[in-house]
Image (cartoon, rainbow, N blue to C red; front, top):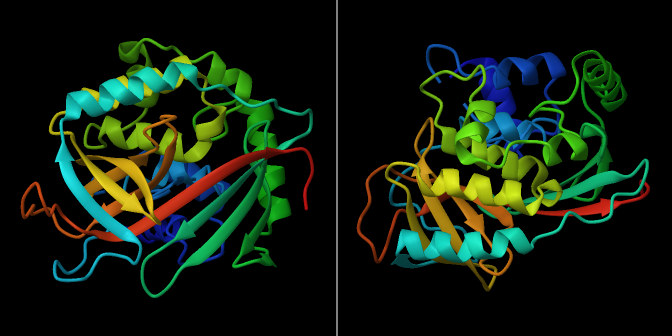
Length: 300
């Protein structure tokens, strides 16, 4: 893994507070070099933006005998078709919240594995998900280059090149094709063949889940459902039942967690090993990242 990819992956995994530069984020989004990363994993590229690149490449592998993170319990393997049928039934009912002019997308991203929980908070302008503020464990932090410099560069890029998967706007997301085949073409634009389409879907969920219109959410779920080898299971995280959708990431097996009632993505896990001890146990996670979003009208 290159130093650039590791920098983005570590940021997305909450190991460092420094936000990767726009140049680096753009390079990662262009896809792994002959070898392979995430933004999450990734997917946040700017707090959330870095997600797009991260989930695409992460898949941290650890020792198979490590215990699961506290508060994580794996349930039974589930029928894939039944799980996606439930999620796809819920997806069209989701609504994008009211978006105030000049508002922000706030995201809270929590690590729940060793050496202990950490909380990363980000505020991004709704127009292009431009990062303007971040906190780590409740403390305001800056980065190098500074958040102000990153924001300025992101706004310039947005003005010159328009929105894309790295800097989407609500209007741009609403205009994306909802036919899965056409959407795949957008997700895979400029992406190496080795980069799984499922990783790109996961990155979009991690980047901008609350901004996804119901039809777009449904299309992303249909793409995941059609992924070769995809599996599903039940997990309990912090006492709440979720669905885990497992797919082969760039660097190893990865799971994306969904709320069964809403079809909102709520986190992901990089699994310990590519070996699977069986349907009842299932591979245990090396790292678990959970997120929540909220649209706000002003900075704290």
